[in-house]
Length: 499
Image 1 (tube, rainbow, N blue to C red):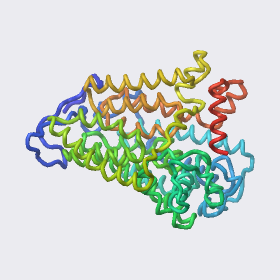
Image 2 (cartoon, helix red, strand yellow):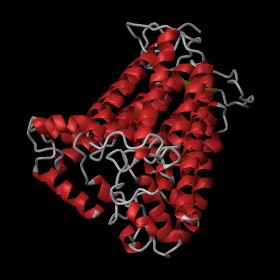
Image 3 (tube, rainbow, N blue to C red):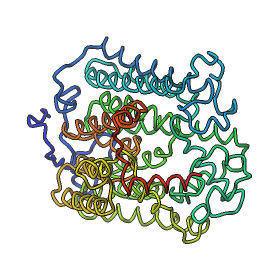
Image 4 (cartoon, one colour):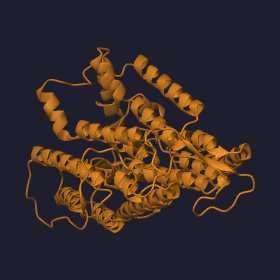
């Protein structure tokens, strides 16, 4: 099929011919899919003014590997700003096998923070070159780069955040100490060895019941073993997630090279999501599997795995209505809902058995602000004093209206799911860099150049906003987006929850 000359967002309805890997249906005649472009076709890639050749692409991939290795190597040498709370404790089992490999070349923490900032900016530039070289790179080179990056990051201590230890803290709170992580806090296990490594000491768990239940067996392992087990699982799930991205891109007729590069070469994906060993993969794997199941007409399985994703993080529920509008005829929607209902029953039973009727604590986090969340920056720029409650309410209402409109217009469902996810990220008062990972696969699958551009722009914004260098530059300029009553109240609440 020739590429869409408008490169817009309009959908194409594909009729009864089965997709690759799909069985024939009986009356299940269509799935609303984005326009399919040939390998390397214009609609499969962002409209770039400069296209680089294979040498530039390979150099960009090499720069990503060198940058990741440099950060991991410095993070493993000793306590630093690269790894939170390491000034309190940084045992060899946490720092990993690279500990002591180069001694301690730099002790100046400002220099280390600035070095990290410049490496991230360099990786961001390499990301752009890699995307511009997607037509020229071989899939083999991309896969080798991805495997090398994951091997390097597996050796790293958690970069920039220590949520991994919070996961273990909530698991030990429930499994070892018999306390409900949705009604109790990590501070209630102050004598447990994990306490020293955790950060949210007075925050009830915000994570879904399925994820919490999955982590319970780790509580019975020695802490170093649990730590490395969870790291290996997260890195393995990242690779599984990328395999699903490749598979879905092939189903859609997209160039899988671009899809993989857009996701896996993203510096936030690498340094915050994989390098931080975050739990989003427990949500992303079933979410992308649901898309694959819809494309191959396994509708009940699609509904079921969406509920698995929701049981990890509620934000995954945003995908379900777009799956429902993707399929024709109506009985296929019923099958998706049947699968969701059948999966919801045991998931609810598991949650009630382990945690009673307590729910994840989303309330505290939804009232917190980060300096560069979109509502806080917008409120600060227009003189409202940052992310005021009224402005946050307007942002939530705008999100609802945006989703309703996208569902009503019934456009390209993958593109619309991407725009809805982008709107969700933009509405959050608590915005952290790795949330862009929710958007990356949808942008990779979409036919919309505008959505991919917006995704790359969001990546650029998040990298620049959250690197240490930006904070110091703004401080020198006497610019502080949190210097408002609501910002100060949020900072005080964060301190209370973490102390």
